[in-house]
Image 1 (cartoon, helix red, strand yellow):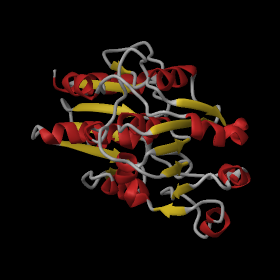
Image 2 (cartoon, one colour; image 1 turned 90 degrees about the horizontal axis):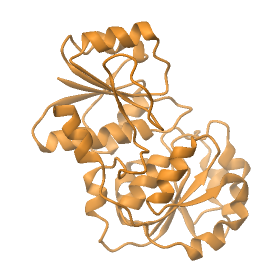
Image 3 (cartoon, helix red, strand yellow; image 1 turned 180 degrees about the vertical axis):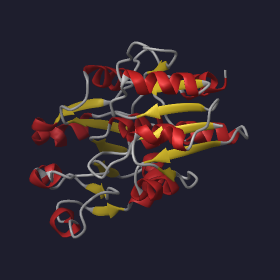
Image 4 (cartoon, helix red, strand yellow; image 1 turned 90 degrees about the vertical axis):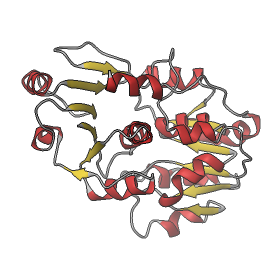
Length: 280
């Protein structure tokens, strides 16, 4: 059995879920069973909205072997710290162990490192987004994130006035948050519309790197709002894939960038390479 562990948290975005979701769909298309593990019920719902099966909820990365059995294949996409003791146990317990690491890394035991931001490769995105790259598109959407726990968007929301952007409503956004935000946007897109928003929008502005990669693959004009929390390799990869970068502190120039942007052009997704690595 193949297990994908995607870290989720109400303070975080769901980039990991979207990456492992792309892999799950690729395996499912080939009739190969796999199971997704997440940390909370809201991430389960988000997965269903992405067209994924019901996930299994576990507490932390420490609990993977409570579900996955000896000899299974496990891929871990999580920022959680894995001690040498735990990593050695997982590497010996599972037949294959993959770790998703931005900017690569060094294998400590027999685990394999997979880097979703290798600029020499294409992005890891679902095939349905690449398939939409030549379809007709319309509209501008801000997909800020799945969460705004510190209300960073709210504190800067006036910068989006008059830009004709719809707002994507994140899965972890605060209840009763809409009234404060929506007067600055032209409309609302619900979380269950995520896949359609990526496939159909002409312009996507987002602070989530994985969403920027998906939007670029779908052929949208894509602007990534760099909040300063990602390593340099993420910015370099997105730039090489045709995504425009705008530092969060320069939001006043977003209007100009929206008018100057062109559709992204990028090389083929690394989805096939990652899928073959899992099955090798």
